[in-house]
Length: 72
Image (tube, rainbow, N blue to C red; front, side, top):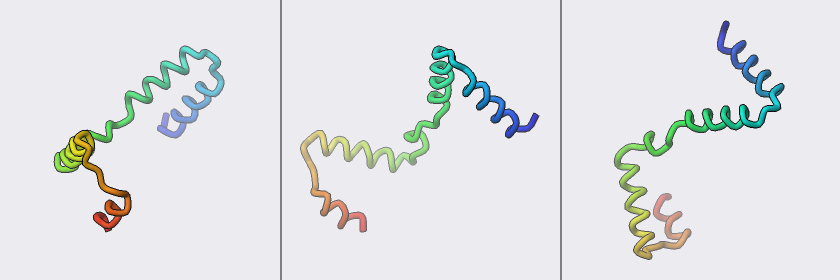
């Protein structure tokens, strides 16, 4: 069976199923399979985000306009 046929059969099973517990289990499984964006970031990107959080925690903020000027 090819992947397209398998997907269609799975979709049909989901659409025809009224068992809330089954649907919730399937939803939980799909959520767990979603990639964690944090792991896809480089170490430099992760550090930059963490630094920004530390600065916000210390009350250091800039205006939105200043931010736009910085990135353009």
